[in-house]
Image (cartoon, rainbow, N blue to C red; front, side, top):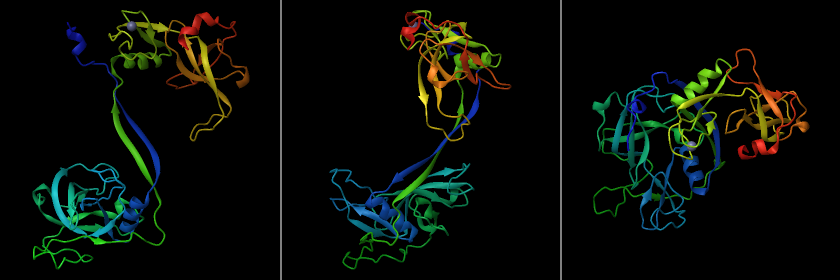
Length: 339
Ligand SMILES: [Zn+2]
């Protein structure tokens, strides 16, 4: 196998841009997670006891060894021991603390597993595995993991208020989790988790050329040197042949509707009246259809084979929509491989 040296070099002209993907993720809670989160609201930390007697905090709904459903809730202390940690010197937005802190795994007294959370500490030199910590509760609690604002150092061997040392524990002082019925008034039954992913996106060599061409209102694809298909937008390689696509080919601007759907649901933040048509459009010279909105024609008159051309708006970075060219419809045989 040979590789062209230039293929390995980083593309000097590749674009980069921030890309944020965010959405509210709504989930319902089963009885175990509901009790856990409602407990946090009430300053109570609950775990669950497995079939083998292990106490898991945070609790799970199924035994990790036997896969049996487990429901035996127990209460553990709000003090614990750091089992491992990592320093976070540059907190990101919406992390538990807005200043540098440690991510810690804390085994709460009475638990056999560790909980991931933040530790408020002045610096990494103040953190060590085995250090004693306790929960710092958030002032306003809603039934979420953030009801624990963070952990804080707790330089004493004392165990927190709620639990009792088991008198039968032969003097070791080990704390036993105590049974809890998990019943609270006004239990939390669902949560909305704000999912957010911050990327720095680089579209790579092929799509950089595609995007740069769009800024001049041209559409550029790439041809596979093996099967000669022209990919638009280009991905840099032919998925069929597994080889890099290298020849740039200008396609369009007109194209053919290969298939389409009528959109009847109005999307939030999208100022388009429904119903409208969204279509796959094979630009002339392309062997792959891209998608776009069809305008300038009643939605119920759009059809396969309709010839369309792009409509640009001032400052637009890609066609706003496609409209009929007025040409006769394309023959089915001309686009049947592109559907
Ligand atoms: Zn190919």
